[in-house]
Structures are given as C-alpha cells and as structure tokens.
Image (cartoon, rainbow, N blue to C red; front, side, top):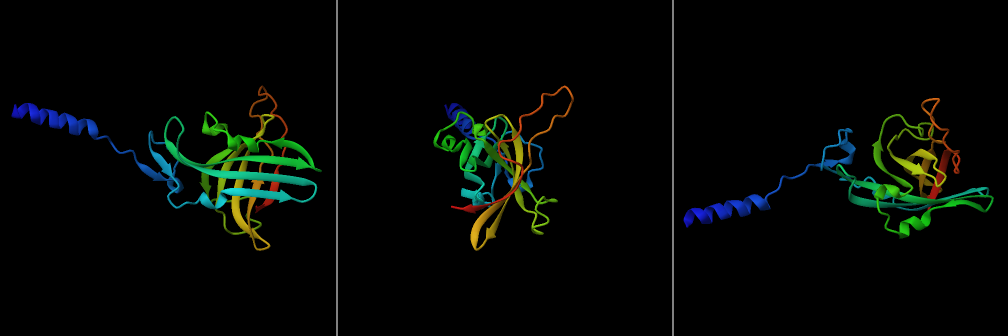
Length: 196
C-alpha cells in the first residue's frame, strides 16, 4: 500500500510540473524564434507609443491609434506588440479609415492594419533629425492591399508629446513575374504626429 501511495504521489507531482518556457526581452530578440518562448516588453519600451496621434497640415490629415497587446501567441511563440489602425484624408476628403477595427476583436492579432514590435537602434531614417536611433519597426497594411514598413520614434514638438514616423512608400516586386503591388493610399515620407 505504501508503494502505491508513493507511485500516486509521483504521478501527481509529475503531471503538475511543466517545463518553463523562456521569457526573452524583446530587445534581445535575435530572430531565432524559440518555440513557446515569450518575447516580453520587459522595459516597457512600447508603452510611450500607445495612444492617439494626429498629423494635420491642412492638406493632409493622418490619425493613428496604437494599443499594446501582451503575450499574444503567433502560432510559434508569444510576444508583446503594438497594434494600430488609422484614418487618412487629403483636402478634407477621407481616403481610408480603419479605426473601427480597434472596436472589434479580430480573429487574428495580425489582421490589425498596423502591428509589430521590432526594436531598432541601428542606422536610421531619422539620423538627420537626431543622433538617437531608437525606434520601433512596424508593418502597415492599407485596405487596397499595399503594405509598407513604418519606423516610429517618440519625440516632442512645441512642448507636446509626439511621434515621428517614416513610412516607406510600399513594397516592391522582387521578380519580373511578380504582380505589381498597388500604390499606397498614404504617401511615403516623414510625418510628425501630436498626441491627442
């Protein structure tokens, strides 16, 4: 009877113990993608980007809303990331507006039109503005199918919290047989957006 009790105890302990998945700071992500690891925003580097940001020069209007999502499973590992949606107008004519997506729980986190968490400190499109190369790399998908990369950094404009983005125009075709990607709705370039 004593042996049976010991075996039951070992079974209970064995079934309740599971291997710990590693927690990796997103700053230390080397691209190796460890299965079931958690790439965590340990130092809350994504937090300053959360909020509503507006660029309005009279001719162009761009509104971006960023939210931070934590411990999202992408099918291979868990990660913290920024998601976002946007509205864009030219001469008060709305050309695209995806902001309502944030009100919905989309089936997959990567269906939000802006997402990512790539911490970058190497050479930067912002070098002519600042020597601080820290920024977050994100992917932006427009409703017409155009995809672009965004480099986003925090800043201050006239004493107000701001972000500066550099939007690459759009993805390019790699082979002559590839279909020509659609033109971006939102032009590529630099934008300063003030926190609302």
